[in-house]
Image (cartoon, rainbow, N blue to C red; front, side):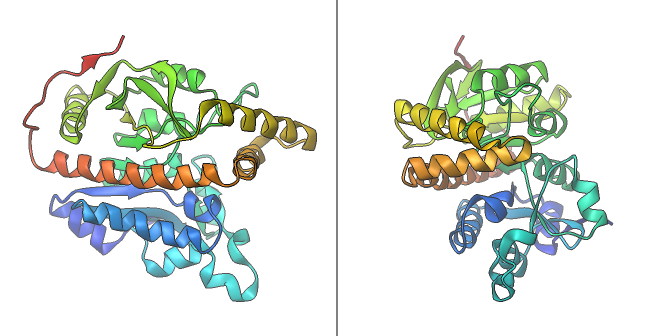
Length: 317
């Protein structure tokens, strides 16, 4: 079969233990070596510390694997290929549009939000932690496959909003059109990835992992399509004016260099890191760990029965 679930994850699922899915493009394309491997290990450790089982998803030798092992983590991080100079250049990025082709070519690839959501849903995992989701770009017709995946997969996704290079308002509108409930964690506005919050209000906010778990249960009981998106603002982000200035310069540089399509996102994120003297990377690392911790707590809450204080969400309209 093209989907392989590791024994540890399979046992956890069969015993009703909490499991959290983690993406792997942050390992393959998000950070340099060896920082990427250190982060991958730390994310899994954070999930374990909160009482859940981590399930990092990736494409390994033509299989979509849910719960990769240490050897695969090192391969994706580039350490396993460092001696022959290949590094991560041979590791691709898997989304829904190219997933089948990557498997047919027996490739190795990090999974995006969209591909990870598909794998988690297929494996029966209810909770997924990531950094920022893909969304609507300023270029016409350029929208991420993450949006449809969120609308199709019955998974609760914890993120820190759309990536900073995207149109946050348009992304929120698109999620509403697709029927994806977006709720805040201790915040009434959409998280801004590198900054704590945007100016876009959310329809509901919850104050605890137990309340978030309760809302997701109601979502499933109503047989609503797709999953739920939790907006978790980073504890300490960049100044909004600084980020706006960095983004404007990065976009001008991309236009001057003729960068577009799938190359645009990595180019812009790389330029933001350079312009901010790596402060965007520091924020990214922080929010990834915070999201993994919250996701694990939600996963635990889903397994322990009804929350003690399952009150209705407070309106933020």
